Image 1 (cartoon, one colour):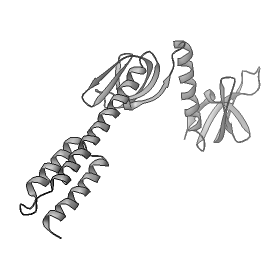
Image 2 (cartoon, one colour; image 1 turned 180 degrees about the horizontal axis):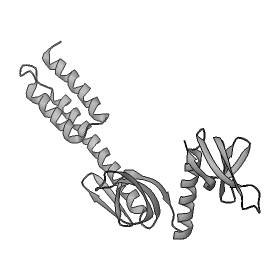
Image 3 (cartoon, helix red, strand yellow; image 1 turned 180 degrees about the vertical axis):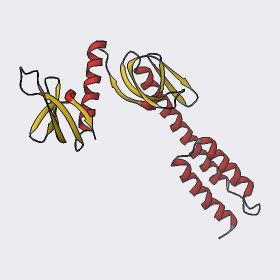
Image 4 (cartoon, one colour; image 1 turned 30 degrees about the horizontal axis):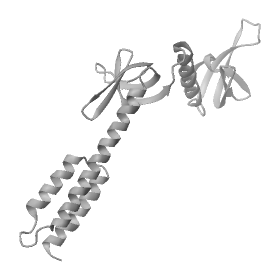
Length: 206
């Protein structure tokens, strides 16, 4: 096999790598490198070169289309209630923010949404809710968060302090592994052994 043929095979492999994740600049650099290092006696044929450039153009167009779709989606979130994570610039801690999106902007390859006083990346949005009533939507997201937290307790050893009976002011301690959780009329219950307790009564998790 000649050097030119080897170069063509290498270029095809490089093109596949690009399509799996490299950006358009990396693809163009690979193509330029291929042209510089090709065998002068067996240069890349025009049809092959045109084919590579056509693929580059198609990949660039697909990338731009994807960016446009993401931008449209981001602008569509303005006025909606979202939940997102972000990294605190001062502490480098990952935090969570919930609130109404008031602005969306595109900067380079990144899309930002303003949630309250915090700016978050489009990719970090974890939940979007149509804003009917700020109070109702906050309640919904808070309830979902509570339920998610409750499910995370399954299999863990916990301690809870509950009233001995409905009208009693005396409390007893219940401890054991959480085997299940359920929601009823807005209240979330955890199953500990044979006892069922409100999630809010759990004060220790091991």
